[in-house]
Image (cartoon, rainbow, N blue to C red; front, side, top):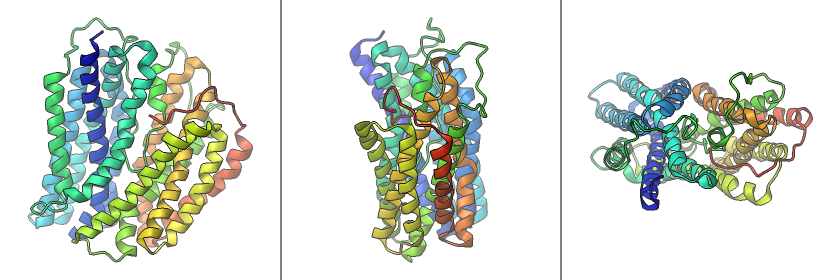
Amino acid sequence: MTDRNDRNLNFAILFLVMLITGAGNTALQSVLPAIGRSMGVADSLIATIFSVSALIWVFSAPYWAKRSDRKGRKAMVVIGSTGFTVSILLVGIMLYAGLQGWVGATVAVLAIIVSRTIFGLFGSAAPPAAQAMVVLQTPKDQRTKALSLLGSAFGMGTVLGLALAPWMVLPVVGLAGPAFCFGLLGAITLFLIITRLPDDRGGTETLDDARGANVSYPSLGGAPAGASVKAVTADRTEKNDTLKLTDDRIWPWMVCGAVFGHAQAMTGSTMGFLVIDRLALDVTMPITQQSIGLVLMSGAAATLLVQWGLIPLFNMKPRTMALLGMVIAVFGLIINAFATSLYGIATSYAMAAAGFGFTRPAFTAGSSLAVGRKLQALVAGRVTSVNGSSYVLAPTIGVGLYEVWKPAPYLVAAAMMALLIPYVKYRISPLDPEESPSPVQ
């Protein structure tokens, strides 16, 4: 066990890795709508940039989670941080080239998609290894708290990235600025990892001493909800234990999680376009990015307020959280579909995001309570997979609906949530959770 000062330094570096990764990802998502419009690229093609990286993340995350248990954990953090830094710098270069007209717009976007595959392939290596290092260096009675704090970096990053992105639209590089800025921050973080984190290769720690879990793709509206913390701290499952996605104990919650996630991803991915069109903004003006950032930040802040404030305060049952969240989200989405002012868009999006802030922890807690202790790691894996899969097709579907009719993605998402209310009410029985669901994934 390392001394306390070393543990604090190591934790601060690992926290920074998660924070910069989450912030950089959402910062890109906030500027890409304006960039796409500046280059004359179809909105649906812009949405594909994140759908492709999310798809690759879903398949690569379990691989890195297993590998981090058996190989050097520092090496895995280096791989993940390098993947993020290289990817976002390449994105910045291609964005700048496209905005300057050095390459065609379609070529630039396709190159950006390829660059984002690097993040999808390697970015997911860092979170499970970071978790494993925290477990290894933290006393057992403090591990859940430490892991929850580490996981909160993604949630904090969603707000930080959206808040900083408008300030990073710089005179020389323009809208490509956030990519270059977060690439620089990623490089600084990588330097700290290499020079300050202890090298654990060749250590004697066993798989049970320190293990990590795959984490869902960091995205707009993707504030964490406890799954990976449960996976890391849960009892080891027996080798013969299995848990199918369609298992009667968890299937109703899996359906809910898929609907919640797709509705949230569909609407979040179109919000930047909605702000530009409803307010008739010039994409070359700073006010455009500031307005987009303000709206998206209001949604992220509302989500975190619910998950870090209201849920622990009221200690509601998962079923109650799901029903309350769906009702709030439906009203917010319907208003959002027809809002015409910055105030109206921001407040209605915040209302919808607050609703989603209830539903995602409900999904995590409800799934966890449906099975026994030995299956907690398995059910957490199912929850994480469903959360991550929501960002594969939903952004492209949402933007496609938006191109057909601007209110469509919000009304479709509202209808999905409204139709799910009777399903939750009559298909899922109320449960008494043993403890309040953790807001951290």
